[in-house]
Length: 333
Image (cartoon, rainbow, N blue to C red; front, side):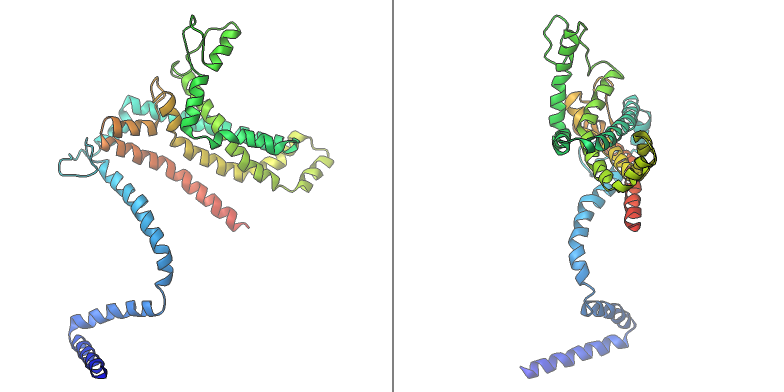
């Protein structure tokens, strides 16, 4: 056994000497030695923990993003890649910014972003401050938060019954139209009256669903405000509105900004409520729903990929803004 080990050592030494004599061998040894030192020093250990996560991120996030960007320059087809796909250049991108349906979807998303974000954050902030003094605060907040725990599909089905419309000579099954008729009015097609009534009706559904989420986050921020600060302002003669405007609002502004940007990111991707309640008909189309139609209804992966990339481009700035705000808050602690 010892003789075998000695022969192996001699062969290894001879091989190393042979490599040292040649130029390529010296280059190979120089490149291999740092790797060996890295393994011996234990430098691989952190990567053994981070590596699996990086592989998953690369496979499920980085690769699909790159593949989608590349696919957006190819034409119609129900495959991601293949020899039969036609390179169309910027034709899909031209469709996104010139087609009337896509322009309507972009307009509706902008309308959603402005109204939905304003009212969810505004109502959430008002409820967080007002309910802090209510005796059954936890119970009421739990009830208001319930819609956020329901899936978007479930919310869409619930409100589809609320907005249900029948002609005037037929009994109304929709709650809202039943109330309107009971007071002597005419039933309204809340989801088919274009272009504003139905969009506003859908935005109301989103506000109802997400106000509770905003309230919970903003309520946590409100409870972190020192009560001594508020009491001192009241002792100095400030009324409640002045306390809110001068003290509460500035201290809660960073949290409100984070919640607002989160709502913008969420609403740019809005899909389930639209899909269930109108499927984008009657001038209610949005970007995500149009992307779904192009991909699964029309089997045009090229256009769907271009729309997906546009959606990504719209969302990324708000994500970066949120990350920077989180970093600034962590750095300020």
